[in-house]
Amino acid sequence: MIPCAEFEALLLDYPELDAGSRARAAAHAAACAACRAFLAAQLEADRALTAYFAGAHAPAALRTAVRARIERPSPFPEILDFLGWSALSAAAAALAAAFAPSPAPAITAAVIAASLAFGLRSAIDLES
Ligand SMILES: [Zn+2]
Image (cartoon, rainbow, N blue to C red; front, side, top):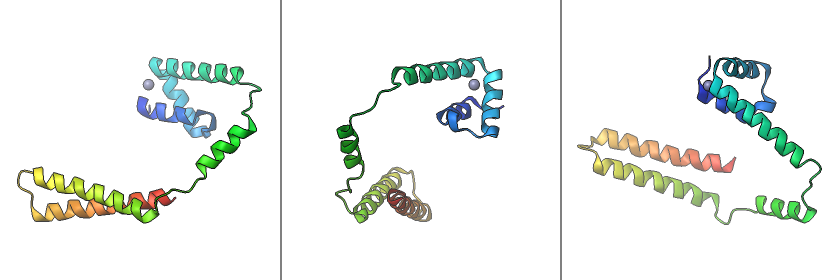
C-alpha cells in the first residue's frame, strides 16, 4: 500500500490520474479510513464548488487583466536571477563553513561548488 503522503499527492491530480495511479489511490482509500474520509471530503467540495459556480463566467476585462499580469516580462534580466541565487547559495555556504566545528577545505569547496550548481540550476529552472 502506498503511504498516506503519496495518496495525498495523487489527490492533487485525481481527475486526470492514469488507470494505475487511480488503482493505487483506490487501494489506499479502501484500506485507510482517514484518507478515505479525506477523499470523500475533497470530492464533495469539488462537487459543491462545481455546482455553485456552474454558469459563472469571469468578465472579459478581468480575463484580459489577468493575462496581462501573467504575460508581463520580468523587470529583472535573467542574469540577475542567476547572480541572486548564486549569491544566496554562496552566502549560505559561507555561513555553514563559518559555523562548522572545523571545516575541512575539501568539504567547504564541495559545499560552495554545490551552491553554485544550485544557483545555476535555479536560474535554468526560472527560464523554463
Ligand atoms: Zn492514508
